[in-house]
Length: 212
Image (cartoon, rainbow, N blue to C red; front, side, top):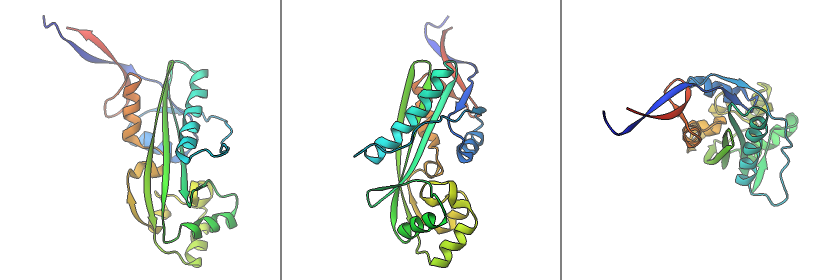
């Protein structure tokens, strides 16, 4: 009998996404992670003098922590995405005029997308942040108005979605494409491993040790 131990995999974990974002749901489905959606109703206000990365990570951790406290048996994923330009955080536009102002500010320039992800399981809560540089092409007023007319900008940070029509206004991305969509999958999987889960190309399970 060998005296070493090998990693075995237990039945699939019950995964909860603490977000109602359709993009995050699509990304989890893309990598085969079956999950339920339980949005965390939290205050997303920015604290005075709070750096953007701290803000995004705090919200991601709070979302995951709130839902994990209600459901200790689940692996809970929380995430938050913000757009930063001129040291200003751009959230979701409140109306068409607000969206137009955001898009004019981003036009022809490079901004930063900050996406934080947090994973909670049992008493463990881990998190990390991805920063991505995104450059827009120059947009005319007609471009901006036509894009807003699609309604795509209205529920997205920075008033654009990289996975939809917004792909045509982006000139360059330096970093994790999935982070711009709202969920950095590689970092998320590493965080899941940090709390004792294992991704097996189609789902998440608890990894356990057993001697042979």
